[in-house]
Image (cartoon, rainbow, N blue to C red; front, side, top):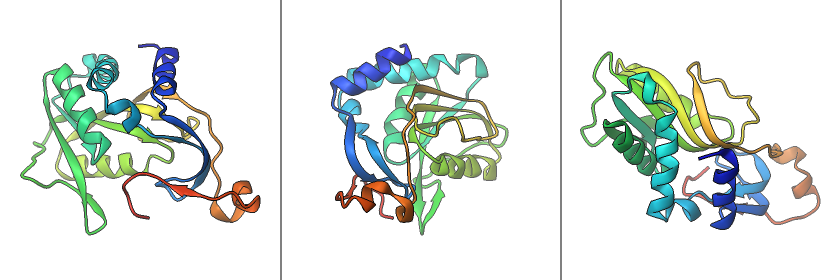
Length: 190
C-alpha cells in the first residue's frame, strides 16, 4: 500500500477527525486519528498489517509485540504475515509489562508495532520491556506517525502514513485560548 492509499483509507472510514483533542501524551491537537474506525474492518486491518510486515520481511523477525489495545490487533496480523508469534504488553501499576505468561526469549529478534505515535512514549516503554527480557528490538512498525519525524527509537522504524499536525502544551494551546471545548478520546486515563 502506498502512503496515498493509506491516507485515503483513513479518510474514507472517518478515522481522521478535526476539533480540539487531548492526546494520550497529554498534548492538545486539532486533529485526532481514531484508528478503530479503520481497524474495525478486518480486511483493512489485514491489508495495513500486510504492508507493515512487508517492510520488515528481511529483518529475521522472530516475535512481534505491541502495546495494548491497538497493538494487539496489529501484532497478531503482522505476526501472521511474518510467520511468528505475536504478543502484547499491558500496564500494571502504571508500568508497561508482560503478563498472561508471555515470554521473550533471550536473543530473540523482536519487531515492535504500534498504531499511532506522537511522542513515541508507549513504543519506548515496549522497547524497554523487550530489552529487559533479553530480546533484541530490530525495528518499529507504525500505522500513523504524527511525530513529524522527531522520534528516535534507536532502531529503524517505518510508518505507513505520516501526518504533520500541530500539537500544543495545555498552557499554550490556541484552541483552549479560543474557548473551544476539548475532547478526550481513546481508552487510556491520563
